[in-house]
Length: 388
Length: 189
Image 1 (cartoon, chains in turn blue, brown):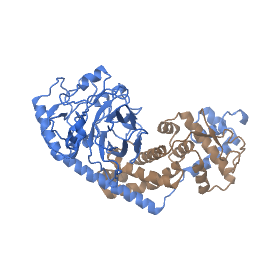
Image 2 (image 1 turned 180 degrees about the horizontal axis):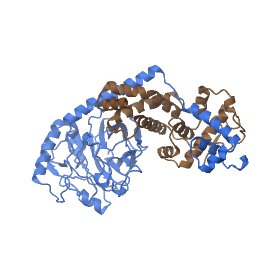
Image 3 (image 1 turned 90 degrees about the vertical axis):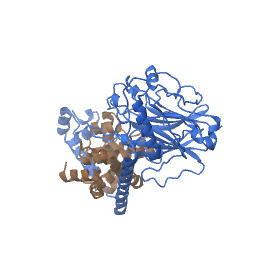
Image 4 (image 1 turned 45 degrees about the vertical axis):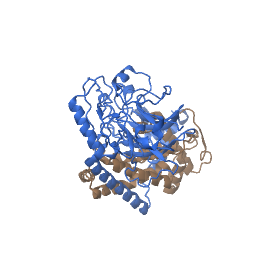
């Protein structure tokens, strides 16, 4: 074969250099002096590209020192967390609708501890709202019911909504009113199995809640617990999933409310027998809560933002793959801004700290909202009512 | 794994700042070099390097030793850099001239004086979609399958892009006006 008969000469010699040719292709190159000379050229280039670029010494020092500082911050944070965070309550496997007395008592104890120890779990209960201290959001048929406990009346300055897993896809569902949901926790297991296309009833809005005095009653959402101690077990363990990637965050406009959507993706190499059943992990939504994580002390919300929601979601931004050790991408680096043209909401991505994604959604007033989880793709959906 | 490095990793995972510093210093140059070549400019390279180091620090507790530490570190650096690049405005995928090397008849580069500066400049001029695979190949020694997996491209595309990138570099360095600076839209690869 002469040169003119070689279909893609450059590709052939490039692949030869990289050891990515068949025996036949190898023989072809090695029998052709002209091709071998070109291999030499590519080899020179390859060697050049493989050379190491050195950075300015000062910048190198700054980079390393900053990383070490970050490490210290993480250690301090870890220490703080380990002293204060309640462990995630193991999901119960009972199929009975009502939790046992022991579970209720232990949940009450846990809730009391959480109220006094962790600002993240602070909640107002002037209207005797019930909330879930532990919700199993697994998708198997044995999933337990959320445990309903009566909260003690505790006044706090901030209100937090910890949302339960609602498996209904609300993004394509018609807008529905934000309804009071203080009586009973929805049966997420049943709704999941039936694949009902009904909006989540996990939010609570009344006109008077916009009033500062009733601010805390704006949100009463059943909730799974949220803890940074569970970073390796978020997602649905029963489906073999313990890690999800942040794929996108966006604001979608609807009539009466805007939806802030955090979308997660499932790595292709992650084994799952039922990918459409995979939900994000635990999450928490807190009104005007603390959002200073890690070393981000310098982040200041724009002045026009008078209220905000802090959204924490256990959905790792990093995945390590055993068989071919690798690192998967997170969606964005700390500092990303999420906006939509016709929405007055603005969300700030504050990074992933040990698997917990943090967003801040800025608002010009206290708004009612509802939260839900949806599968395929796994999403956390936060519907925030328009400002009337 | 180097036993000394293994000890450093364990110590760093247990909060030993000095061990962490040693690890970061020993891999810094390679991380920066990778970031520099992938981004094509110093400013982005410095941003990406800082992000990569932070990701390494944050991810270190999760490192389980299933791969060489250096492999793990460079994977993080690569992904962080690609992440940074994706944050920038997306541009159409550009291709290179098809007849890039047909007029080359023998080894010419070895007769030319090719400096690292020339090469870096030529590399920086490559479209990102072509620069990335060749850097992953030549700097990290990744094979086509690994690159394809990382970039979520067909292996054949990786093979083609690396070949075309090399041809473009060669022509640029030889001052081939027919090839230099010419890009065109690629519809099918």
